[in-house]
Image 1 (cartoon, rainbow, N blue to C red):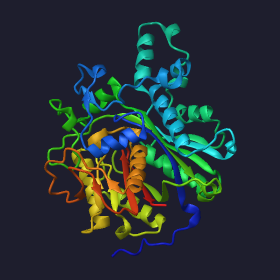
Image 2 (cartoon, helix red, strand yellow):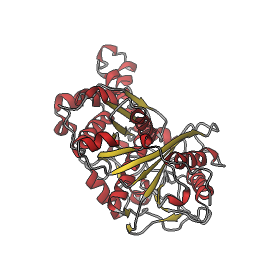
Image 3 (cartoon, rainbow, N blue to C red):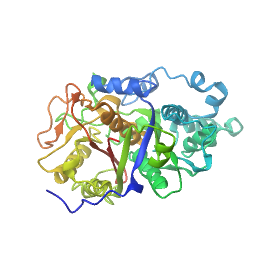
Image 4 (cartoon, one colour):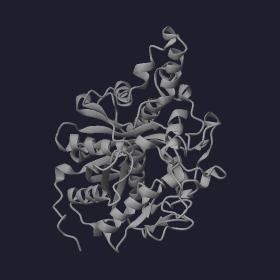
Length: 417
């Protein structure tokens, strides 16, 4: 039993999760995402805008009409990733039963993770420039596309005048943003922070770049089964898009307004592999350190964890490194694990936020959704993975892992209230 990381929980480090907003390839709401995840079937499909590319499929938000959701004028001003962020933030505030007309806006922050800016938007404008038409470039091109606009526009929309910024740590961005937001609360800077991530990763340029890197699955004959985390036959990840925003709140503030937390964020940690721009450290030292430090900050040991929401991208190197870190931390007593990207695809900078929300929902429902497409688990990765159907089981503490290009590692620890 490992005890050196067991420390008392400091009350001011515990943060309440009082609201969730989410839209993913499963649909425009938190409920639709959770229902699809529990069905355990991949959502990847062929997409018209990717026709003719080396990879023609992905996991897109279905039937999304920004003008209907936000109004034509606002939708036109915002890029797709910011549209997602705004809708998720509105949902989260509603779910938390917050009244933006009466909250102390100076103590409300917004911290969102974004992996990159919009390559779709810039491609259009660079085409005009390349054709010799600089006067045709949209004056909205820059403010529409820069990564900070997701957080900025959410703050404008909701009137949150506290700290406002964007985290960019590749595919760990959404989880890192939640950790930074928790620090703003525990330090006394904010009472409430809207935290999460947003990304539209299905631009032709994005797909082409990842395809050229041989990072994407090429299983085009049956896209729904292409994402196969921890499976012997995994051959790369499936790109996705979406957003998730959590309302994080100081427990005393939540108590004063009689809010019922969905879960508690007990601890978090971020580390760097300092190894390679795109490949994980094969020894997984940074990932292991992030998990151990997050457990320490949460005041618990590896034996206290009932469930791990894995990063599980379906790449050969990434899954192997994550499994190695988990095997060293948890040993033979592996918690029950799942890999949501098997269903939802990989939403890049939004993935960590989406999976944080799913971890909260697992605690709320006392249910672990299955990993899809796990036909032949890689025998070199002996994790305790739930597959086939959802598993109802008592859950008190959950870990969620997020790792990204550049060696970014971010781990969050949630518990029941």
